[in-house]
Length: 65
Image (cartoon, rainbow, N blue to C red; front, side, top):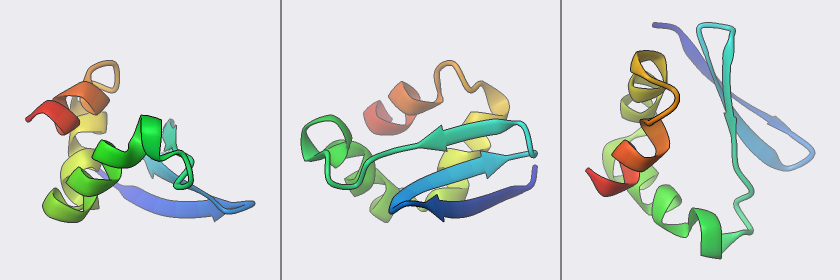
């Protein structure tokens, strides 16, 4: 699994294996506040691995796990 964190127009995006993209608005605390908290706690690599394993469930698994 290869991932990179890119940013475009102030919006961060995780790209996994050059074909899975996940972007979020860091100013949208209502929708992404818990995600950003978990990202700080668990690290970006943990989320990238979940995206690689199953991109359909990665977000909910990450914030609920």
